[in-house]
Length: 229
Image (cartoon, rainbow, N blue to C red; front, side):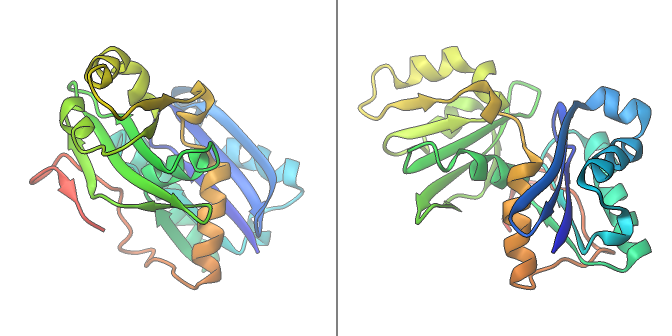
């Protein structure tokens, strides 16, 4: 199954074309540059490298955020348009889940994803790694960093672009705690469409697709600042 996977939730626009679980072609680009030039030419370049075209794609996957309102809508609108034109299935997956997917092989039983939400806050979620799968054990949060850290029980790997922003606060919090954080290489902190591809193939394989007409980005700022899915 050929799948086009894109995520535009953060500072890096990431795209990958996959065949089942194999990555055929991928590219990461600073989002401002991708949006200013339109992301369609970027997608075309990845298609060419994979020696495929839109007509060869069997399904589309998109990171739903949370993240930047404008860039999320651009990415989702593109994927929805492709799905409607080709009449091929679409899946949407939380970008926090995608980051956890990329970090699950780094040797920790617990992962906490922390992403910059501006306003001195983070988007976050907590995962347990079992049988090489990162399973979410919390809701998706929007909160101050101290409130998220209080929810971490036991040793934990911290990942996401929010980790560097709040590194001092994180280290100070854990200084007097028995449980300790593990920091990862910066390359794991951005959403990677390669990791989205692994999750999307599983969704397609199990026929858990989304309605292209009602699929929406994940926004956490409205209402009580928590979204359950």
